Length: 256
Ligand SMILES: Nc1ncnc2c1ncn2[C@@H]1O[C@H](COP(=O)(O)OP(=O)(O)O)[C@@H](O)[C@H]1O
Ligand SMILES: [Mg+2]
Image (cartoon, rainbow, N blue to C red; front, side, top):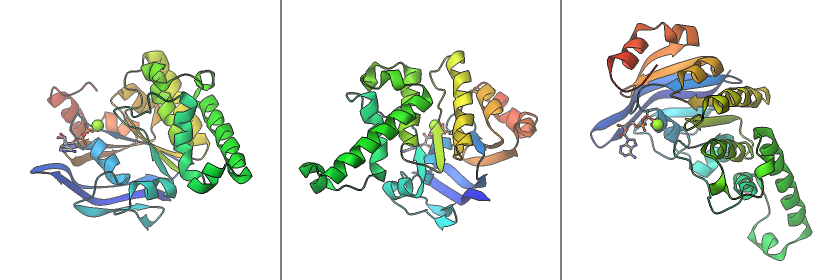
């Protein structure tokens, strides 16, 4: 079954067609890669899915529900969590507090209960901390829980964003260049982490320039170039696709 379905998505910025009539589906339980040279429209597709940008036309369905016009917080409630190409953490807050911020969307206590520190709210808070710690353990950052986010290494900040996204209980997690700034050792650990996320039943969608990561981690890949889908298939098919080779080798954009 497809978890996410994008139908004829179009988005312009002024006269520039960032995403031009792109359609694809993401099967439930898969690791799905979205690749292409710089400026191809990959991040824009993510922003369209999460409601950060509006479609000019087309539709996006998540679990057969039309989420095309949904506000970002509703999209999160439906079960889509994300990380950002340019890391967006609360840098002056601790690592644990950052993950708790991701958990917030699943907490019921309103501001009054929080202010009065009612028992129900304290129980919920304690549960949220336990859950946040569990996610930190899962990504390998438990030992950093009390540190300020800004003091983490770049690679660890990326892992913290993943922990924060996982704390929101997603069915689909979308990762925008998760290996950006990571060394080879960290990237290999990330490939393992991605398969552990998938083993939890969470579908993974990622944008990545590191082709060795993409080919190791993804079962299905869609390639964009200048806002258009130029190829779709498994890693073997993508690596031998003439249009893909041309897109990567024809310009001076990227390595393949
Ligand atoms: N908010 C925006 N305003 C104007 N142009 C944008 C905006 N976001 C993206 N673009 C443009 O859309 C194109 C696709 O960008 P993007 O989706 O970020 O590409 P990718 O993630 O594949 O590198 C680029 O030409 C980019 O400059
Ligand atoms: Mg991008």
